[in-house]
Length: 114
Length: 114
Image 1 (cartoon, each protein chain N blue to C red):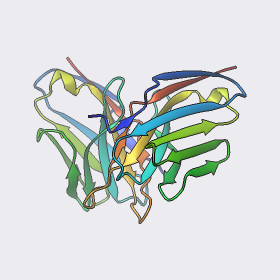
Image 2 (image 1 turned 60 degrees about the horizontal axis):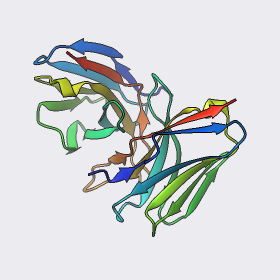
Image 3 (image 1 turned 180 degrees about the vertical axis):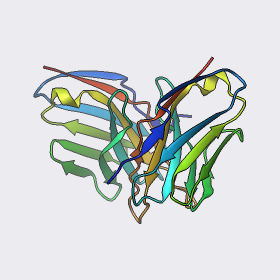
């Protein structure tokens, strides 16, 4: 059983640029969530994808967008990067069932915006 | 507005002793909670969960207690081991309208001294 894999692990961008982060979900999981973890903070929910559609969004602007593919892998795109977008971006997959929804996280992509 | 709070940023404990990590929440509608452990350069890994129908859940050396009236939960690790040194996050299930999401605390860094 493979876990959640994310790429790239680290990247540096400049303000105003665009970035795409990728995630392969754990085998058998059909739901992917993205979280942003700023320095010294806990992970914050960005959005979730289920059946290739966005299925809920946290308090993030539209320049944060995503995709989910038929194999349940996912991308997070951020346009017009700002300095405050510097953070660890975590992808989590899950197979929600009644009463339990344990997230399985990848190791994250650390984005630095200069 | 921090709905899940971990007020102790760090905790040091001697090997073999008990570690107690605390978490408070503000929303009485939260009914499912998880604890995650995070090592450097790795994603958070699921540790233990508790549903609001219980006040205690145990898994080996790890026990989580839930006090619904106080909106407080705690994670006990007995006995603590150096390998337990990590950042611990508590998270509350904030699922709404089919969007499965969690609200995380800011984490407590546990250091177990040999």
